[in-house]
Image (tube, rainbow, N blue to C red):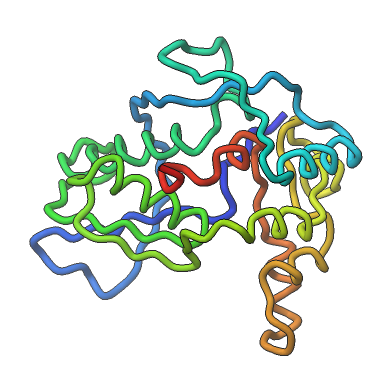
Length: 229
């Protein structure tokens, strides 16, 4: 089974050293181990495995006054990674904090320098993560660039319902992924949530659908991050 990188929209670290950046762009993929400790929620249900299971999960999650949390993780460690109880917003924020600190001090393998200034750039869920990071650790960031971001979360149930969410591994593109990931079920769902009528090239819609990422259940259950406080 594959384990997908979490979140379809993430944070980007903007790094500024004393010297100016080169005009040319050079991107490198790095795997960086970071120590993390976070206070996650614990949910007592199994990952949805069928389309019916996913719809029932979404309908329960979007009911007013309802949630699926029954206790809070307070320092215990789980025996294995869980797409429900470990891959959550606060763990990802803690990882972003740890990565930021390692970048500042220049202790990341493959990057030869530290950085005096770090700017966090996010879109949508990445903006929630970046904002939450600065809220929980006020001195960690020298600036925030937030797009697709709002404190008004009333739209989230409508977003979830219009996404036509299905088990990711029920789609041929993601058939090798384990239970616990969900994805937009069809191209019309992507259009409903992301594209305004008459304001896009249909080719871009097809590209957005074919390049979309998966969402782990735990991330959806903790999507507000620290912005909920």
